Length: 134
Image 1 (cartoon, one colour):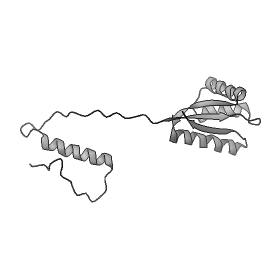
Image 2 (cartoon, rainbow, N blue to C red):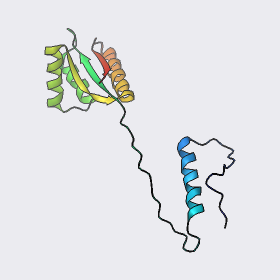
Image 3 (tube, one colour):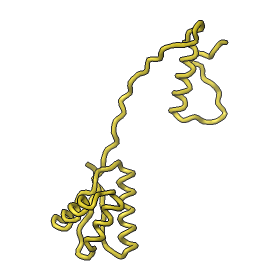
């Protein structure tokens, strides 16, 4: 059986993602290079370095109206903190004006910030949550 060369472009009626195109081309390359007698070949893969996404710091800001118990429940519910961690962060918010809830990739940090703001608004509290890079 004859396989197309790895450089051959295959007409495709649907669009492929960049990843799918790479996998297809590598498969064709493998089939073209495979040993015709045994049908097996050792594949050497190039190691690609994937960089970590930048992390964003999510902070709760102090106000004079939001109860401490509500802040603790936010930290436990939205940020999955233990009661001890939640209490420590709540006291940091209370004493210092803000407290770090965690470091997350941008999309997760945005989602957690929105979740806190929505829940605080729903409960009628002015608690604010912000994110900053770093």
